[in-house]
Image (cartoon, rainbow, N blue to C red; front, side):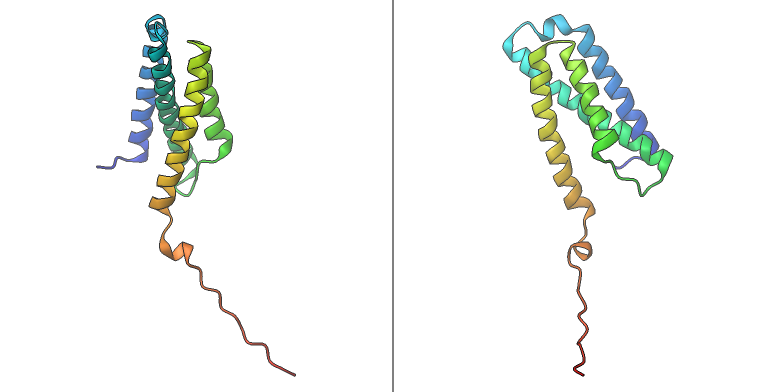
Length: 134
């Protein structure tokens, strides 16, 4: 069931802030073992996805329905926010978060291409005009 852009912005913002808070409050436990550190990197990629969704929805609300997220400012700001958040917990968390986030971004891009590219856009017909011989 789809929600409106405004509601999606509100939900993703609240979830991102909640996840950020939980990560900061439980930072000692999150770095207590190697598995927790890698798991925290995965949580960072979830934070990246939520913050990217929130920023992209905000820009869509402000600039109209035809707006598309681009590398700058949405993706790079969300990635920087996630990297700084995870680096404040542990340096390895930041690295694994960066790797998981890039993998998530690759998957988001592929899903977007499958969803929003119709076959009519992919198959453009080229009309060639015959040149008259003089």
